[in-house]
Amino acid sequence: MSGAALRIPRPASGRGQVQAVAGCYFVASFAALGLPPYLTEILPELGDRQARWAGVLYVVPTVFGALFAPLWGRLADRFGRKRLLLRAQLGLTLSFLLAGWADSLVTFTLALILQGVLGGTFAASNGYLGAALEGPALSRALTLMQGSARAALVFAPVVVGSLSGWLSPHRQYALLAVLPLTAALLLAALPEPTAARATVGKPEPAAGAGPPVSLKTLYSLEFAFVFSTVVSFPYLIALVDERLPGTSPLLSGILFALPHLVYLVTALAVHTAFQDRPRTGIVLGFTCVALGLAGHGLAGSLAALVTVRLLLGVGLTLGLVCLQVLAAECVKDRAPGGLFGSLEFFSKAGAVAAGLAAAAGSARFGPAAPVLTGSAAATATALAALLPPLNHRIRWSRRCPH
Image (cartoon, rainbow, N blue to C red; front, top):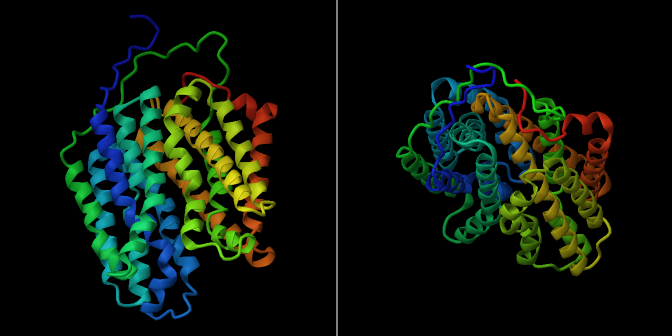
């Protein structure tokens, strides 16, 4: 037998399986993404009349989700990705039921903690796909998963708002618990993905290939990208109201959704264009995010706001897609649950840091501060990616080391 590795490829997961996993993540995310914006309406029912705890409770599931994501990922590699994916969906069901029937702030807070501890559906779904797919097929599936997240972020708050006339957002937690339960029942019909391919011998690196992306660099880019983009979310509506007084809630919601709609429309085309040059896409993505967010600080008309929101959407799409390409390469010959669990930790850590920075900046300097903070962070990361040390480390390679 030659010194080259003998690979037993993972069986290709059918398109139907990928769409089923992405669809189940979409429906399970409705309560998790659609209800937190209504915490200011929920908390007065639980005794917090001024909703002073809304900002803290907004990030509670994210904090606990970040802390437990690596653990659930490692357990998935040990006990089976399908089992842990089902566990995540059933965990959301339990936590949503508890939140919907909570009659005190303490019980509601406990439900949000359990949502973070027992959830983790995104990392679990990616771990499942990572055990069944590889290379471009996996990165395309991960791009579709991000599309599910963007779609839920766009449509869930609208649905929750539409239902509010008949059922309070607080009680909608219990109603929407049926969605992750339904997702669990659908996922139960999917097969357990076969274990990752085995290798015999150690492959020689390709001649002239540059050093591959390291996990440290991948995690750093994930944290920086999530921080740069999410920091603009919490106070965008306030910024729109400041720049365009009298703007209707519907128009404000459309402006909020625009970058995510850009992702939904263009993500697969961007994947095709940049799957062989993700470093270029990441640098362009951070650059567009930096310019788009900086433009928010200057935009004084509806046309200007639409333009900078679309530019931010281009950056969001480039960055997310190319990060998925790098993650798909790094999962080769690795346990997918552990990798995606750790990646989820850094993603959620970036979101928590962004929320804290947005709150602090807005309180001191006004609603424009978060977008300028995000622009500065994206600019610094784009420049760092062009410097020799980081540039050298994230040069494209067809393999990632152990």
